[in-house]
Amino acid sequence: MLRLMADGEPVRLSLTMTTMKGLARLAFIAQQFGYEYENLQQGGQGVSVLSLVPDPGPQARALARENRERYPHAAEGGPLPPLAPDAIKLLKARMLLDLQRQYSDRARLALIVATLTVASLSLGMEFGKGAASVLTIAGVCWVSTAALVSVMFVISRRSVAKGTARLRAAGFTPVTDHNGRPRYVPPGGRLPGHGNPFAG
Image: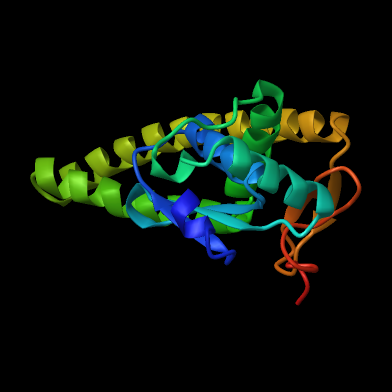
């Protein structure tokens, strides 16, 4: 990541087998070297796409110069700046909200219903014998999984509320991007990147 950041261009990392905490730590380290978190999206096959952009603010520039001097071998696997748990928690909250709002509730519901229907019918055809048996198995699978999905939706809403409260308490400001998606910007209202990346 630090080697990619060396040319001062926006960076997109496609990562698999990682945790939200790990992603937040990456974004925090990027901040220590003049970049800032822009967005996190879920790609196909469990890939998380983390977007980082240069931070043009004078404080970010000064911090980056200081850390490049103090940690000259960071990009080669050398020592890194110490982690700040509170800052990482805020980054994690922003990332979770961005992931959960990547799609609208309606779009997510439509995708889940379609996936459940196909998966349930596939199981019914695999284990059932005759149309009635196939439909019975498929129906039981669909209803059982739909109940689990409903619980997951409730947990997701609670997670959104918790993350929103954490960010508001830290002085983050709610904005709406050009896709109509709610986002949060750091105290002071500064948006990530050069200018307003949420402009149409």
